Image (tube, rainbow over all chains, first blue to last red; front, top):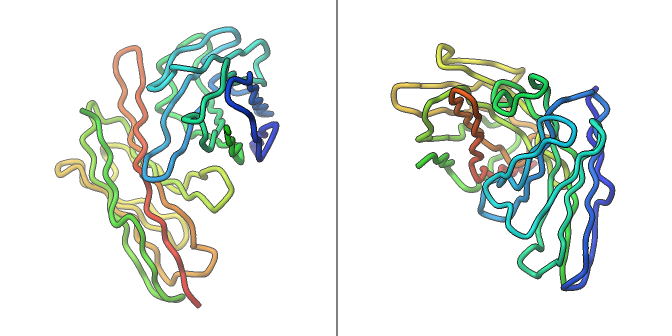
Length: 120
Length: 114
């Protein structure tokens, strides 16, 4: 079974803090994704990575950065947390064509359990 | 604009009954359509995938249909069980020459009552 784990299920941070969310997958997948999920809205893509050190912006990258130093690990960084970043954050991984950013639509994505982040 | 609209937003049915969830999309160029199930406090899990040429796909008590001409899909759940209580998310993918786009619907929250 594919396993995607996220470092925390619940996190409470103060405005202005730097926040790290970590995601690890154990299936040697090329692609990894960070989404946020808010009530009444579909999942929105923040960033994705299609290879080690390779990343692309999603639909809502503002206020976020990412890091992928190892294939199995993808980190989401909030440089200075704000209250409008209170949300559920979901990490996902999928197979893909190494070094190719556009292949992920053909593959199933496997999601982690999510991190509920509250910024006060 | 690429969009995925789901209806109803929420639905309550009695255990053992059938139900159908709807998904309309305006995504182009269409690559595939998936239905995901998301239990409370968990990440989504894929139920079915359909490409342009497929119009029905089953997974146990779940049957998905696709009408690529009208850009509509449905997810039919037969003989519902309490464990079917979850959000069901329709996800449509577009594939360009060198890029992909995945658009998520906002989901239908289904509650099964005993």
